[in-house]
Image 1 (cartoon, rainbow, N blue to C red):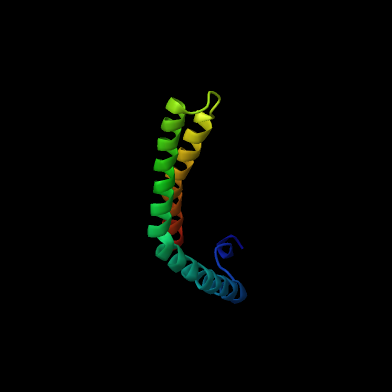
Image 2: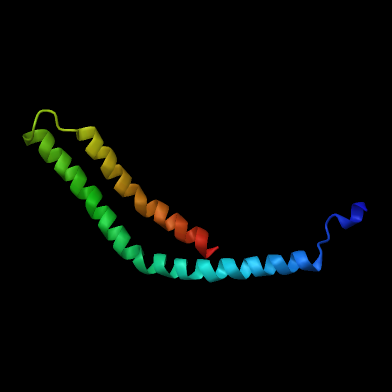
Length: 95
């Protein structure tokens, strides 16, 4: 009995293969879409991060006295980290 723990039934192997095919059928179109949109996401997020930092500096020097500078800087840092997470998601899906 102890030697049969590693063996699987033919039904379990079939279900595993079907699951693998379904994952590929869903994952490949998602990967292609993410890969096509990667330059756009990189450009937009980088531009928003840079504009956020520049706007924060401008409003900190010239703007209202209670300007939420740290909130703006954290938002810009968030936009700067989105391309990193995006690239990791593409790497995860590419397997």
